[in-house]
Length: 237
Image (tube, rainbow, N blue to C red; front, side, top):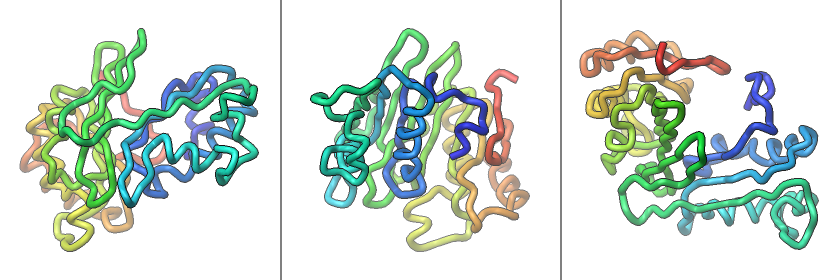
């Protein structure tokens, strides 16, 4: 996860927002909770994510299966069990998927987090938008865009972080789960985002940056950047 290497402080972390619970998007969470103990965290951690189905747990179920008294990491149950004392608690909330509309999931005096359901095969999934300091940043998460919901969530965002998991030519299961470059470009254009950041780059797309860029630039005229681990991007620069 590289959280420490990023220079961020665990005690400053207010909210964790999950797009979905595939292992490559959730496996580090237990380690983050344990690391929060060593960081002397003393405020509750808000955890947001999708509701569940017959394949995946809801966000609250995910938390309990990890940390409840009979969970995988029961020795950390003080962080979810209200009958036990602890420096902080994990406060989970499952975002409903029944309506394909933007939902405000969390607000504070500094930022607002909104989510919208996206299609990722049979897996419950969300895209996320944060409005903070006068700008908006939207994260697609893994999705195919079959629901056609991301563009409305990302409207006028300074940054759209979109996963670049498949090349344009891929068909079959991968295409039903993920966006091809042309689909990413269409969303960025519809949403009129200022910068498009391509992340979640996999073996299937690494080394194909020029091909990907050419496809996207035919449809989207804004700035396009390829993300590497620990890169920093600034919305208004």
